[in-house]
Length: 301
Image (cartoon, helix red, strand yellow):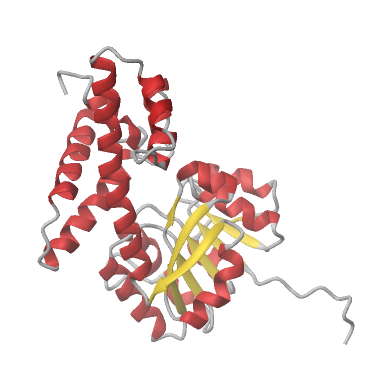
Protein backbone atom coordinates (compact mmCIF):
# COMPACT_ATOMS: atom_id res chain seq x y z
CA UNK A 1 0.00 0.00 0.00
CA UNK A 2 1.29 3.42 -0.94
CA UNK A 3 1.31 5.48 2.27
CA UNK A 4 1.61 8.68 0.22
CA UNK A 5 -1.95 8.34 -1.06
CA UNK A 6 -4.25 10.59 0.93
CA UNK A 7 -7.35 8.92 2.41
CA UNK A 8 -10.61 9.61 0.59
CA UNK A 9 -12.80 12.15 2.36
CA UNK A 10 -16.40 11.04 3.05
CA UNK A 11 -19.09 12.60 0.87
CA UNK A 12 -21.27 15.14 2.68
CA UNK A 13 -24.58 16.87 2.11
CA UNK A 14 -25.44 20.10 3.92
CA UNK A 15 -29.06 21.21 4.15
CA UNK A 16 -29.88 24.78 5.19
CA UNK A 17 -27.45 27.60 4.43
CA UNK A 18 -28.90 30.55 6.32
CA UNK A 19 -27.22 32.82 8.85
CA UNK A 20 -25.70 29.89 10.72
CA UNK A 21 -25.61 27.16 8.11
CA UNK A 22 -23.64 29.03 5.45
CA UNK A 23 -20.47 29.61 7.53
CA UNK A 24 -20.76 26.13 9.08
CA UNK A 25 -20.87 24.55 5.64
CA UNK A 26 -18.03 26.79 4.52
CA UNK A 27 -15.74 25.36 7.21
CA UNK A 28 -16.43 21.82 5.98
CA UNK A 29 -15.58 22.86 2.43
CA UNK A 30 -12.41 24.61 3.61
CA UNK A 31 -11.42 21.38 5.38
CA UNK A 32 -11.59 19.54 2.07
CA UNK A 33 -14.85 17.61 2.44
CA UNK A 34 -16.69 17.15 -0.88
CA UNK A 35 -20.08 18.62 -0.06
CA UNK A 36 -23.39 18.91 -1.89
CA UNK A 37 -25.45 21.85 -0.69
CA UNK A 38 -29.20 22.47 -0.66
CA UNK A 39 -31.28 25.39 0.55
CA UNK A 40 -34.96 26.18 -0.05
CA UNK A 41 -33.86 29.56 -1.42
CA UNK A 42 -31.11 28.54 -3.82
CA UNK A 43 -29.55 32.01 -3.90
CA UNK A 44 -28.47 31.59 -0.27
CA UNK A 45 -26.49 28.48 -1.21
CA UNK A 46 -24.87 29.84 -4.38
CA UNK A 47 -21.94 31.62 -2.64
CA UNK A 48 -20.75 28.22 -1.36
CA UNK A 49 -20.15 27.08 -4.94
CA UNK A 50 -17.15 29.42 -5.06
CA UNK A 51 -15.67 27.50 -2.13
CA UNK A 52 -16.18 24.13 -3.83
CA UNK A 53 -19.73 23.21 -2.86
CA UNK A 54 -22.04 21.58 -5.39
CA UNK A 55 -25.38 23.37 -5.17
CA UNK A 56 -28.31 20.98 -5.71
CA UNK A 57 -31.86 21.58 -6.92
CA UNK A 58 -33.46 18.95 -4.69
CA UNK A 59 -33.04 17.26 -1.34
CA UNK A 60 -32.77 13.84 -3.01
CA UNK A 61 -30.00 15.05 -5.32
CA UNK A 62 -28.09 16.38 -2.33
CA UNK A 63 -28.34 13.39 -0.01
CA UNK A 64 -28.25 10.42 -2.40
CA UNK A 65 -24.90 8.68 -1.96
CA UNK A 66 -23.83 10.91 0.94
CA UNK A 67 -21.99 9.31 3.82
CA UNK A 68 -23.09 12.06 6.19
CA UNK A 69 -25.94 14.56 5.92
CA UNK A 70 -25.79 17.69 8.08
CA UNK A 71 -29.04 19.54 8.62
CA UNK A 72 -29.37 23.18 9.74
CA UNK A 73 -33.02 23.88 8.87
CA UNK A 74 -35.24 26.13 11.00
CA UNK A 75 -37.60 23.75 12.81
CA UNK A 76 -38.54 20.14 13.37
CA UNK A 77 -41.62 20.66 11.21
CA UNK A 78 -39.47 21.85 8.30
CA UNK A 79 -37.17 18.83 8.65
CA UNK A 80 -40.18 16.51 8.78
CA UNK A 81 -41.60 18.13 5.65
CA UNK A 82 -38.50 18.14 3.45
CA UNK A 83 -36.89 14.89 4.64
CA UNK A 84 -39.61 12.66 6.01
CA UNK A 85 -42.68 13.73 3.99
CA UNK A 86 -45.49 15.97 5.20
CA UNK A 87 -48.15 13.24 4.86
CA UNK A 88 -48.15 9.46 4.90
CA UNK A 89 -48.47 9.44 1.10
CA UNK A 90 -45.49 11.69 0.45
CA UNK A 91 -42.26 10.18 -0.77
CA UNK A 92 -39.79 10.56 2.09
CA UNK A 93 -36.52 11.99 0.79
CA UNK A 94 -34.72 10.44 3.77
CA UNK A 95 -35.53 7.01 2.35
CA UNK A 96 -32.91 7.68 -0.34
CA UNK A 97 -30.17 7.62 2.31
CA UNK A 98 -27.91 4.60 1.98
CA UNK A 99 -27.48 2.08 4.77
CA UNK A 100 -24.60 3.15 6.98
CA UNK A 101 -25.12 6.85 6.31
CA UNK A 102 -25.65 9.22 9.25
CA UNK A 103 -28.05 12.15 9.53
CA UNK A 104 -26.67 14.89 11.80
CA UNK A 105 -29.41 17.31 12.87
CA UNK A 106 -27.83 20.53 14.08
CA UNK A 107 -31.11 22.45 14.22
CA UNK A 108 -32.97 23.01 17.49
CA UNK A 109 -36.01 20.71 17.40
CA UNK A 110 -38.23 18.98 19.98
CA UNK A 111 -36.78 15.98 21.79
CA UNK A 112 -39.67 13.72 20.76
CA UNK A 113 -39.18 14.73 17.10
CA UNK A 114 -35.51 13.78 17.35
CA UNK A 115 -36.30 10.36 18.79
CA UNK A 116 -39.02 9.67 16.21
CA UNK A 117 -36.75 10.60 13.32
CA UNK A 118 -33.92 8.50 14.73
CA UNK A 119 -36.20 5.46 15.10
CA UNK A 120 -37.42 5.83 11.50
CA UNK A 121 -33.87 5.90 10.18
CA UNK A 122 -32.59 3.14 12.47
CA UNK A 123 -35.11 0.77 10.86
CA UNK A 124 -33.37 1.50 7.53
CA UNK A 125 -29.85 1.09 8.86
CA UNK A 126 -29.15 4.82 8.93
CA UNK A 127 -27.51 6.47 11.95
CA UNK A 128 -28.69 9.64 13.66
CA UNK A 129 -26.99 12.27 15.81
CA UNK A 130 -28.74 15.30 17.26
CA UNK A 131 -26.09 17.99 17.54
CA UNK A 132 -27.64 21.43 18.13
CA UNK A 133 -25.29 24.35 18.54
CA UNK A 134 -24.82 27.47 20.63
CA UNK A 135 -22.72 30.51 19.84
CA UNK A 136 -24.79 32.35 17.26
CA UNK A 137 -23.59 33.76 13.96
CA UNK A 138 -20.31 34.90 15.53
CA UNK A 139 -19.54 31.38 16.74
CA UNK A 140 -20.49 29.90 13.38
CA UNK A 141 -18.15 32.27 11.54
CA UNK A 142 -15.26 31.90 14.00
CA UNK A 143 -15.55 28.09 14.38
CA UNK A 144 -16.20 28.44 18.11
CA UNK A 145 -19.66 26.86 18.35
CA UNK A 146 -20.59 24.77 21.34
CA UNK A 147 -21.94 21.53 19.87
CA UNK A 148 -24.07 19.28 22.10
CA UNK A 149 -24.19 15.80 20.56
CA UNK A 150 -26.71 13.12 21.43
CA UNK A 151 -26.60 9.61 20.01
CA UNK A 152 -24.86 6.28 20.15
CA UNK A 153 -21.30 6.82 21.34
CA UNK A 154 -19.72 5.04 18.38
CA UNK A 155 -21.75 7.09 15.89
CA UNK A 156 -20.90 10.36 17.63
CA UNK A 157 -17.22 9.44 17.44
CA UNK A 158 -17.57 8.76 13.71
CA UNK A 159 -18.92 12.25 13.07
CA UNK A 160 -16.71 14.06 15.58
CA UNK A 161 -14.07 15.12 12.98
CA UNK A 162 -16.79 16.81 10.92
CA UNK A 163 -18.25 18.61 13.90
CA UNK A 164 -14.85 19.73 15.15
CA UNK A 165 -14.38 21.79 11.98
CA UNK A 166 -17.13 24.03 13.42
CA UNK A 167 -16.45 24.14 17.15
CA UNK A 168 -16.15 22.24 20.41
CA UNK A 169 -18.05 18.94 20.60
CA UNK A 170 -19.37 17.26 23.74
CA UNK A 171 -21.36 14.04 23.70
CA UNK A 172 -24.06 14.63 26.30
CA UNK A 173 -25.90 11.30 26.16
CA UNK A 174 -28.16 9.17 23.95
CA UNK A 175 -30.41 10.39 21.15
CA UNK A 176 -32.39 13.42 22.29
CA UNK A 177 -29.86 14.49 24.90
CA UNK A 178 -28.37 17.05 22.53
CA UNK A 179 -31.76 18.74 22.20
CA UNK A 180 -32.28 18.62 25.97
CA UNK A 181 -28.94 20.39 26.40
CA UNK A 182 -29.91 23.00 23.82
CA UNK A 183 -33.22 23.65 25.60
CA UNK A 184 -31.30 24.20 28.84
CA UNK A 185 -28.97 26.54 26.94
CA UNK A 186 -31.87 28.47 25.43
CA UNK A 187 -33.58 28.85 28.79
CA UNK A 188 -30.41 30.41 30.18
CA UNK A 189 -29.94 32.60 27.09
CA UNK A 190 -33.54 33.84 26.96
CA UNK A 191 -33.75 34.60 30.67
CA UNK A 192 -30.32 36.25 30.71
CA UNK A 193 -31.10 38.46 27.71
CA UNK A 194 -34.11 39.69 29.67
CA UNK A 195 -31.98 40.36 32.74
CA UNK A 196 -29.32 42.26 30.78
CA UNK A 197 -31.98 44.28 28.91
CA UNK A 198 -33.61 45.30 32.20
CA UNK A 199 -30.23 46.16 33.76
CA UNK A 200 -29.22 48.34 30.81
CA UNK A 201 -32.61 50.06 30.89
CA UNK A 202 -32.35 50.67 34.65
CA UNK A 203 -28.88 52.17 34.23
CA UNK A 204 -29.91 54.46 31.38
CA UNK A 205 -33.21 55.62 32.86
CA UNK A 206 -31.51 56.21 36.21
CA UNK A 207 -28.98 58.58 34.64
CA UNK A 208 -25.90 56.35 34.31
CA UNK A 209 -23.99 55.60 31.13
CA UNK A 210 -25.00 52.04 30.11
CA UNK A 211 -21.66 51.52 28.35
CA UNK A 212 -19.77 52.43 31.51
CA UNK A 213 -22.03 50.23 33.64
CA UNK A 214 -21.46 47.30 31.30
CA UNK A 215 -17.69 47.87 31.43
CA UNK A 216 -17.79 47.96 35.24
CA UNK A 217 -19.69 44.65 35.40
CA UNK A 218 -17.32 42.74 33.13
CA UNK A 219 -15.25 40.28 35.15
CA UNK A 220 -17.63 40.30 38.10
CA UNK A 221 -20.37 37.84 39.05
CA UNK A 222 -22.75 39.48 36.56
CA UNK A 223 -20.39 38.87 33.64
CA UNK A 224 -21.53 36.57 30.84
CA UNK A 225 -21.33 36.11 27.09
CA UNK A 226 -24.78 37.73 26.97
CA UNK A 227 -23.56 40.85 28.80
CA UNK A 228 -20.45 41.02 26.63
CA UNK A 229 -22.03 40.46 23.21
CA UNK A 230 -25.69 41.37 23.56
CA UNK A 231 -25.09 44.10 26.11
CA UNK A 232 -22.93 45.78 23.49
CA UNK A 233 -25.65 45.27 20.85
CA UNK A 234 -28.13 47.00 23.15
CA UNK A 235 -25.81 49.93 23.71
CA UNK A 236 -25.08 50.25 19.98
CA UNK A 237 -28.68 49.64 18.88
CA UNK A 238 -27.32 46.97 16.50
CA UNK A 239 -30.05 44.36 16.14
CA UNK A 240 -29.28 42.76 12.78
CA UNK A 241 -30.10 39.10 13.36
CA UNK A 242 -27.49 36.68 14.57
CA UNK A 243 -30.14 34.67 16.37
CA UNK A 244 -33.66 35.67 15.38
CA UNK A 245 -36.21 36.44 18.08
CA UNK A 246 -38.78 34.08 16.55
CA UNK A 247 -36.34 31.16 16.87
CA UNK A 248 -35.59 32.08 20.48
CA UNK A 249 -39.34 32.05 21.12
CA UNK A 250 -39.68 28.68 19.40
CA UNK A 251 -37.04 27.15 21.66
CA UNK A 252 -38.48 28.66 24.84
CA UNK A 253 -41.92 27.33 23.93
CA UNK A 254 -40.47 23.88 23.26
CA UNK A 255 -38.72 23.92 26.64
CA UNK A 256 -41.86 25.04 28.45
CA UNK A 257 -44.00 22.35 26.83
CA UNK A 258 -41.45 19.67 27.71
CA UNK A 259 -41.32 20.93 31.29
CA UNK A 260 -45.11 20.69 31.46
CA UNK A 261 -44.98 17.09 30.20
CA UNK A 262 -42.49 16.32 32.96
CA UNK A 263 -44.63 18.02 35.60
CA UNK A 264 -42.08 20.78 36.20
CA UNK A 265 -42.99 24.43 36.73
CA UNK A 266 -40.33 26.87 35.49
CA UNK A 267 -41.66 30.40 36.17
CA UNK A 268 -38.64 32.32 34.85
CA UNK A 269 -38.75 30.35 31.61
CA UNK A 270 -42.46 31.07 31.27
CA UNK A 271 -41.90 34.78 31.82
CA UNK A 272 -39.13 34.87 29.23
CA UNK A 273 -41.39 33.11 26.73
CA UNK A 274 -44.13 35.67 27.36
CA UNK A 275 -41.74 38.55 26.74
CA UNK A 276 -40.42 37.10 23.47
CA UNK A 277 -43.99 36.34 22.38
CA UNK A 278 -44.88 39.98 23.02
CA UNK A 279 -41.82 41.06 21.06
CA UNK A 280 -42.74 38.87 18.07
CA UNK A 281 -46.38 39.94 18.17
CA UNK A 282 -45.28 43.53 17.66
CA UNK A 283 -43.25 43.07 14.51
CA UNK A 284 -39.80 42.41 15.96
CA UNK A 285 -39.66 38.67 15.23
CA UNK A 286 -36.92 38.93 12.59
CA UNK A 287 -34.58 41.07 14.69
CA UNK A 288 -31.84 39.63 16.84
CA UNK A 289 -33.09 38.22 20.14
CA UNK A 290 -31.12 40.93 21.97
CA UNK A 291 -33.69 43.40 20.58
CA UNK A 292 -35.83 42.42 23.55
CA UNK A 293 -34.18 45.56 24.92
CA UNK A 294 -36.40 47.59 22.58
CA UNK A 295 -39.48 46.29 24.36
CA UNK A 296 -38.51 48.19 27.48
CA UNK A 297 -38.09 51.42 25.55
CA UNK A 298 -41.34 51.43 23.56
CA UNK A 299 -44.34 52.40 25.64
CA UNK A 300 -46.71 51.42 22.82
CA UNK A 301 -45.41 47.86 22.57
